Image (cartoon, rainbow, N blue to C red; front, side, top):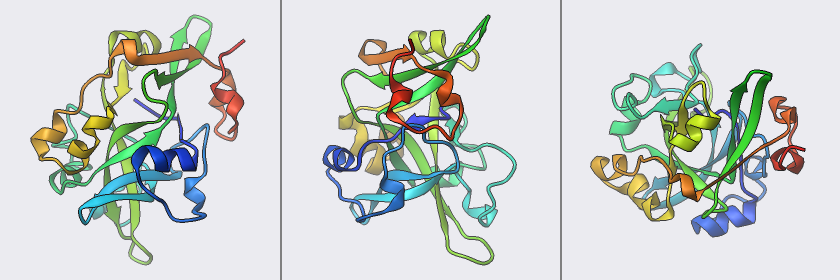
Length: 224
């Protein structure tokens, strides 16, 4: 699974994805501890081009009338998202998105407790999770845009870190971005593969990341 991650600095994000976001948007700020229900930057395909917009993390299906519901929808399992009621319509409609990140956190279960790790890509300073998005409108109010991050069975390296859930987020390579956003369903689904372990970077970090109120660059530094 993926429940916390680091978002890129605005200018670097725009350069990496060759896209420009709205000036001064609050959701474009860099976060070192992005958490579920936050509004975060997401890239989607709109009218034949990439669009950078802010979406709530935790997908609210179109039929839910803006109600997040009691169940977590921050992650969608690759084994079931095409048939799950929460995600299948977004998939059928081609509502796929890129979720920009610089790294993410997972927790390793040890005898003495849980140790957080920061995991990045050695070959991509800024990368993209594969996601799905949807729009849901409350009885009174504006439509809510929201997204989920797709997860896969853990690779050997990730299984050693995330050793309880044995899952990892689906990370795309840059040459897969357009196929995921605008390709056929078969082309998009073929992009969902474990990221090579030899192209990852990972290290233990401070347990300060456990508190979602903490949001500073020290969170991603190796633990003493």
